[in-house]
Structures are given as C-alpha cells and as structure tokens.
Image (cartoon, rainbow, N blue to C red; front, side):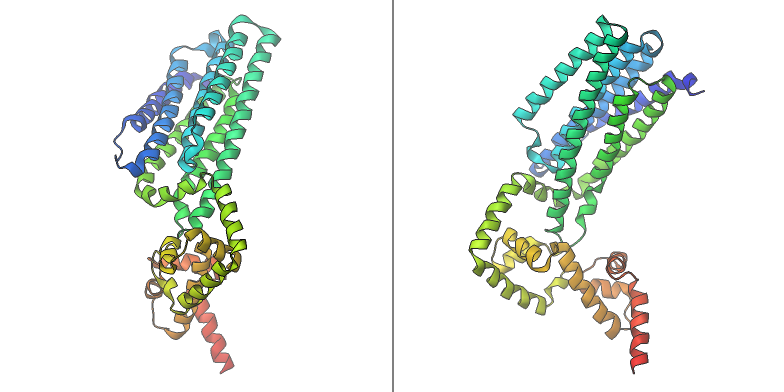
Length: 375
C-alpha cells in the first residue's frame, strides 16, 4: 500500500524539508559577534537539510527506483554522505569551535570525492556483483565516517556538559540536550541511510517521513536555541585545547599547594556566610570574589568535594532547605526555594527529590513525626 504513495510522499517531504533548510540558511539571525559561531553552524545545518530536501524532490521527479535501481542507490549514497559530512561540521562546531578547520575540510572533501567516484563508477559502468561491490564499499566508508563523527560529537558533548556544570549553579546543561537528541536521531538516520540505500520503495517512504520529523525537530531547536545561546557560548570555548590547558593548570596546582590552602580558607568563610543562596551564582563570580582563577577554583571544588560546581552548590542548598523545612513549618515551597537560591518551586522540588529520594513536603512530614516521637 505504501508503495502507491511513494512519489507523493517524497514530493511533500521534499518541499517542506527544502523550505526548512532554506530558512535556516537565509533567515534572520542576530548580528552580534557572540552569535558568529551560531550563524556559521546554523547555515551549515541548513544547507544539510536543504540538500536532503533536494534529494527527496529529485527522487520524486525521476523515479530511478523502478527504471534504474542502481542509479537511485548511487543518488542516495551521494546525497546522504554529503549531508552527513555537512551535518557533522555544523553540529560538532556548535560545541567544539575549532572542529571546522582547513585540514579537516580538505580531508572531508577528498573522502567525499573518492566515495563519489566509486559510487558512480559502480552505478554507471558495471552491473551485477561488481556494481554491488562498489556501492557496498561506498556505503561502508559512509557508515564508518558517520561513526567517527558520532564519537567526536559525544566525546565533546559530555565534556561540554561537565564544563557547564562546573560554571553554573543551575542546570544550564539542559539547554543543549536538544543537540544530543538531534545527533542521536541523525546517527540513526545515517546508519539506516547506508543500509536503506538498497531498500525497496515502501521502506524508503517510511524513512522519508521519519526524516521530515527529525528535520522539523532540528529546525525548531535551532530557532529556540537562540534564547539561551548567550549563556552557553562562553563555555563552548573551553573545549578548544581544553585537555592540554587543564593538564598545565593541574600541574601548576600540584606544585603550588598554598593556592589550594588559600582557596580553602576563603571557601569556608563563604559557606559560613551562606552566600551559596545567591540566585544564579556562577563559578566566575565566585572566582572574582576570591581573587583567583576560575579554573583553579573549579579544580579545587572537583578534588576537595568530588563534585561539579553545580552539584556542590545544589548539595549546600538542599542542606539549607532542610533547616528551613524544620524551622519554618509555615513556609511554602516557593518561599523556601527563593530563600535558598532557586527561581521556582518546581526546580527546588525536583532537585530535592532527586537528592533525597522523596519530595520536600514528604521529608518535612517524616522529619517532624520523628521529632515528635523522640520528644
């Protein structure tokens, strides 16, 4: 049944996906310098989506699946691989600014030309086993490169999450979770694309609809990402040569123990003054207050408390919340949340429940009953 709608589905998906890609490429974006890398990544991802849309339109117009299946396979591999390379550039550069460089670009171009050559040699000049051999080789290279880019992405994604958690007291890392979901979806599409290049029309129809859903999700996420980008962008730079930088600074700290000692004294005083209740506190603000380097301060917190900055601040706030829950029994969850540094009661309740295993109201009830039993 689906085969009857193959061409119509490709046509509809092609029109919508091409529009989404074109809008990302040419739509209005803030021209402030801080958005420079975002604009670059957005245009590259937009070009990727545009290419996928053109592929849908081309296959809808020229029905190679029926007349020349090997040519349809070659078209799919050529477009999928171009899309994968561009998407990899665009999405990885969102979290690793130096991913796009001259060496990487030249390498990707050479690989693509090679795959393009063996794909079309196999499709045009050969038949049978030789043809399939060329096409399968191209598909394997495509799949292998997709795996390579996936590994690079996830390595830098989790590094970025750690950097964000070591900078903000709030869970700002949630704002880049969409990138994780997008890449997971595209990875699945890439793997399936390498396999489904040889699939029948009804499977390609389902694949096309799935692609439309994924591209629409990416489009919406990129649009919404603008709202939080200014908070995230400064942290992205930490991924550039960050390992070498951290090694050098860690070595410095090992050789200068007095730095840790000074930070520890300042930290104890800061905790006594309960300044952790300040809403939206960042490690940069704390470093400025201590008159030290934020990387040194982060290294101290990670090694001394075995936690990220966000986890450490959260633990201090939860312990303070327990005191409020017992001493201010008439206080609402919102009042307690605002008193200890949370902007909303829902955020506070979620954090408390995650840490203690029960809601704050339930904890208060249990603790109050225990006190009454003791009395």
